[in-house]
Amino acid sequence: MQESLTGREQEVLNMLLDGAVPKEIAFSLNISYDTVLTHQKSLYRKLEVHSINELIGKYPPDNFVVKHSSNKNAE
Image (cartoon, rainbow, N blue to C red; front, side, top):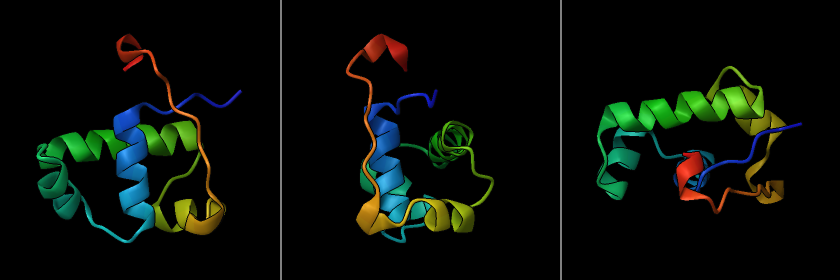
């Protein structure tokens, strides 16, 4: 069973699928670059991909719908 994404992971995912790079995401979300990379790594693990190209190939932006956890303690 696929793990649910947190709200922040969903935000990072949407931005990645829209073509943003980690530095842009960090600036837009007012979080550190390292935090974006941590979220990206977690996304790859949860979505079972190993690269941005694989992510986009497996989950095209127009077709991607993901559930996220509403439990803040699950982050």
